[in-house]
Image 1 (tube, one colour):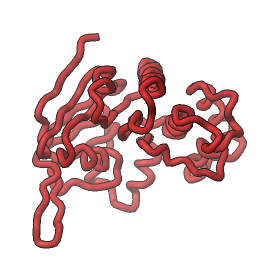
Image 2 (image 1 turned 30 degrees about the vertical axis):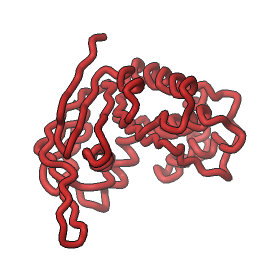
Image 3 (image 1 turned 45 degrees about the vertical axis):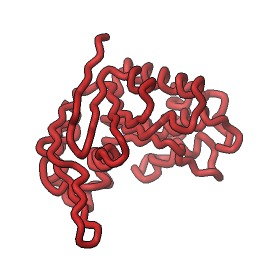
Length: 227
């Protein structure tokens, strides 16, 4: 399993009030999965994503990511685990406006101490993989929304992560561009990349192999589609 969560609980203190974001989730996700997570606002989707992405820790429970017990990792080591194991794709793309597509994709390798020549070669290869072989030197403002999201996906893939976490990856796109992004992720998934996609859009969820529905911090249903 690429992800295992056992009795996952997350409670926040808002002044004197306890907010129960996750109430005891058990979850297993196999390597190479293409999964969507749905649920109303406040259901725990973002909290779950943050914990799986090593950006937060559960109040109780155990999380294993690609065989690493995150609870046993010292907080100062979590950024390294996150950098090596997780790729992120966001609704707002989160590209640096003053950098070219190539420079944006190379950026994570700078923090991984990869030499510039090697980083450039890897970034070119992954940009070609997402269909942007002719857009290396374009800045975000010179790209369409769909192209910017392709750059963001390339950046997520650059460290060859165990899992890509995509938070509303089609939320800022028109229907056609959103369909293209989902088709791209499907192609990458068929090549072996694991994706976990948070979405409010049933059309997006329908294009994944399994949908986990959350409600009030619990798994309400787990729908597996026939392939």
